[in-house]
Image (cartoon, rainbow, N blue to C red):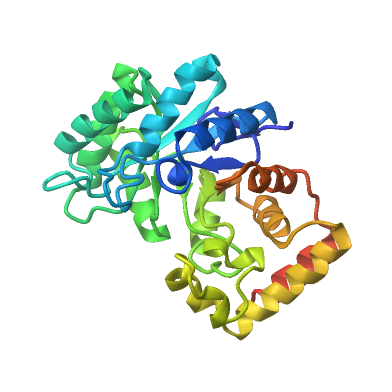
Length: 316
């Protein structure tokens, strides 16, 4: 499978990243192992997680996803360098355990390394902007981790163009590491936060982009088309906003393209993201092998110019 270089990092990844938010939540340890085995057997090599996954589940504290990935790495017997592990810091892990201050980053990375059962993290991301901590302090903490070899590359998630520009400027002025990867929300419906100034900046600065919510919380699978479809679904609150005229136009275009290709709506939606200018690879999750096979297929789909035009116009 053809790999893509993730910005200036030198990391080579397949055009789909497995979203580890489901591990320890909607996928138990046994299922997670089977999913990861199949994903890597299919030629993919990158997993995205975060220290906070999956603290929202009753009885969880956060770190469950990282712990499952760590156990799988040991259990699978695969060489450590065959996997690109992406994890994050910054979300709340308890009282005083939040944000991007150097003291917390220093503790959080050790916790993540222990759970992942590894001595280095390929890509460490600032999960959310922290207005209380200057970029210089955060980047200084990352500089120490990079020099210690505990982290190989750093990036950020959920920054807008102004914030990313400011962080890059601090890196250049203070001779500190820069954010070489960005993780924004991006899909056929949610386009405006990435397209435009942020995408232009990432392209100009050669910043790799691995986007999340490629299926708009599941809406772009085509499963949810009316408010009645949301009844009994844990995703209802997050999907309701998509049930408008624009959302229906997008689903209509997906229906047409997927029928022409003999693919599912979800496969086409992810293929669209992967083909977009500035995107290195989308992140997507699966909780069953059947769902995973569909994700794998999405990475093999090439959309025609006409299909792209139809999808683009539906989402404008």
